[in-house]
Image (cartoon, rainbow, N blue to C red; front, side):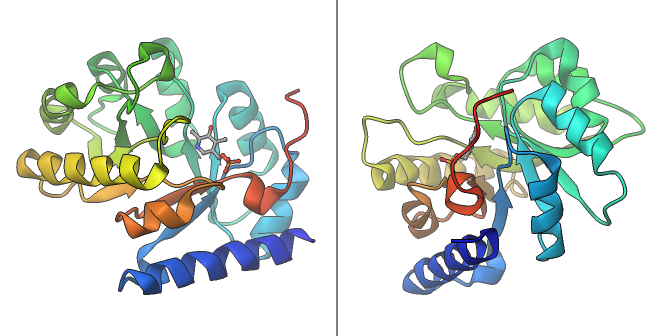
Length: 223
Ligand SMILES: *Cc1c(COP(=O)(O)O)cnc(C)c1O
């Protein structure tokens, strides 16, 4: 199958899942995750009309953003774990960062001149190494983000745990999103759904899908 076929198939499946929940594909942003793939793949997706892209490693993302600076209207999303000292560099090319999970990252990105859109990443497991803020700490992190200049809080991001039914995990994210909105009424977005579970995410209210292999095909070995 070609890239164009896979993109069309994912879009059709997403539209069908949205319709089942009384939602519209227009309410969903499909963000291809292009990590490990060469810039040529991003060029090809761009020629098919895609503008939103996600990467999870800073060095690689920065290099691709530079290589592809000639393309119109690219919107880079950063979805990987982030070191505090790299946060400002990521903002140099990415307008949206999905993996904010602590106050120090908010502080590093706070700015009187540049706006960064963020998702708070929530950890749905008991393993602190998985990245993400604990559910109980979302509210205080949100309050901190709302007070920071130049930070636009979009909503919550999560990765479904491997050992849990994704629909149940995404239902928990939806509840956490409802709670978040009590303190941050504009933070209505939800970034969940990957190649293996995006239909479940759509059923539970996701707005931003981060889809890798189902669109790109298998990833090459990391370079
Ligand atoms: C790689 C990655 C994805 C996409 O994963 P696929 O299973 O290939 O769709 C989504 N989110 C994050 C944070 C990733 O690192």
